[in-house]
Length: 312
Ligand code: ATP
Image 1 (tube, helix red, strand yellow):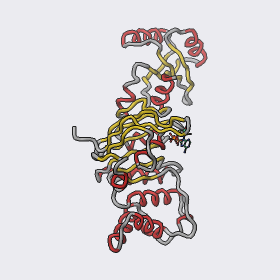
Image 2 (cartoon, protein in one colour):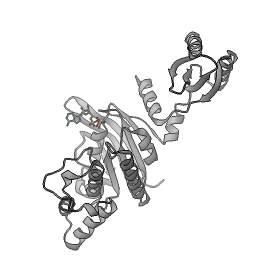
Image 3 (cartoon, protein in one colour):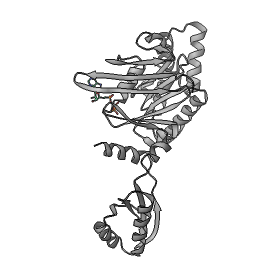
Image 4 (spheres, helix red, strand yellow):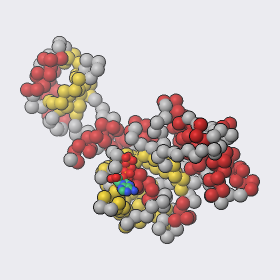
C-alpha cells in the first residue's frame, strides 16, 4: 500500500478537564471517503478541527502528505477544505461577494480569482444566484454556498462536519451527487453525520467514535459482520401475537420481542454458534407458532448502537 495521505498518531485534546479527543490514531489513503460517526460529544468536531489545523492538539501528531501539521500549518491548510457544521449568514452580502472574499483571503488575484469564483459557483450549481443576498438563501442553497467556499483553491482533502444536516430529501440527493462528483475527481473525504445510512452511501470506510476514542473502524460490511454472533429474526406468528410473546417470555434461547408495525415480531437468539442456533430455531418452529421467519440483517445504525451498548 502506498504512503497514506493522512497519518494521525495518538492525538489528544483537552478542554479543561474534558478529554475531548483521547489518543486516537488512524490513517487515510488518498481518494478514500471516510465517515466519522459518534454520538453528541464523542469528539468528532474536535478531531476535525485538529485536522484542519484550526486547533492544536495537546499531544500527538498529524502528518499530512509527509508534512507535520504542527510545523507546516499553512502548507497543510492550503490543501485542506473545511466545511463546518452550520453557517452564519452575514447581512448585505451577495453570493458572489461572499465567495470572492474567501478567494481573496486565499490569496488569489486578478483573472485567477475570477476563474476560481466562477468555477466553484458553477460546480455547486449556484452561479445563477450570484447576486442573491446570502441571508435569503434556502438551507440547500446555503449548504451549496458553504461547499463552494470549501472548494476554493481546489483542496485535495475535504473535511465536512454534518454537511447534509437539515436538508430536505431532494436537497440531500443533490448534495450526495456533488459528493460523488468530488469522489470521482479523486478527492479524499472525511464526513461526519448522525444519519448513518447516508454516510454509508457516501463513504467506503467508517470510523466509530465514543468519548474521544475510536471504538471501531472498517467498511460498512466489516462493521456489520463483526457483530454477526448475534442472530436476530423477524417472525410472523401463526395465530395471535400474544401466544408467541408468552412463549418467548418463558424461553431461555429467545428474547427481546419487539413488535414491528406490520405484525412481525423481532426476536434475538441468545445462544451462540451455528449448531446451537439451528437447534434453537428448530425448537421455535416445532412450537407451531411461526408462519414466516427471516433473518434480520443489522444495518449500520443498529450495529453502532449495539457496539456502544456492548462497551457499557
Ligand atoms: P456533536 O455531534 O454534538 O457535534 P462531537 O462528536 O462533534 O459532538 P465535540 O464537539 O468534539 O463532539 O466535543 C467533544 C467534547 O468536548 C464534548 O464533551 C464537548 O462538550 C467538549 N468541548 C468541545 N469543544 C469545547 C470547547 N470549546 N470548550 C469546552 N469543551 C468543549
